[in-house]
Length: 197
Image 1 (tube, rainbow, N blue to C red):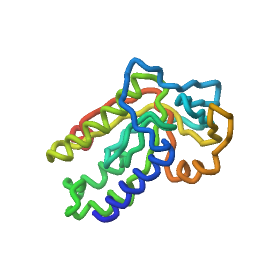
Image 2: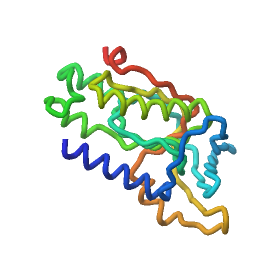
Image 3: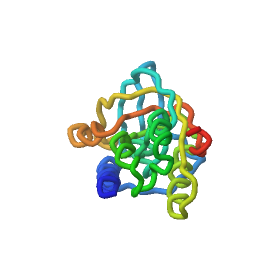
Image 4: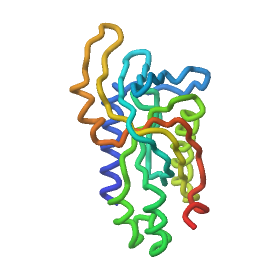
């Protein structure tokens, strides 16, 4: 449990640094600020412009263990356990998502820090909904929330302030290096329980 709390605190601190403490409401009529030019992916927040390189494809589902959604360099950062790992752990300890479960330690060791850049509004809405639903369900001991994502791995290249063009990649790179970066071309919120069978 202590490791999970530490992870969530670290995730929150990293998000605040990357987002420069910019917390804003989701306005679904706004563009997502992501454009893809071949292998180059550019995320424009209005204040900063971040560049990534598109790598290999991603097609996976993740069980959420905390997260934050916002309008920073990435659209959402979550703790996610790949479903292939979740199925193996659930076969031995079906209640592994509970801190007191014998399977909790293994789940924690396999949980990844994931940061998503949404390619479109549909993917952005799904990411935000997954984070919101996870928080709501955890608070009420409800079912676990999963998200299925199709897209591509990303490598962080650089970030600059738009108002003067100054580059501050050296400040952001260590935070980005702690997460697996994913371009979400499509994303769908799903209940985990049927997927664990």
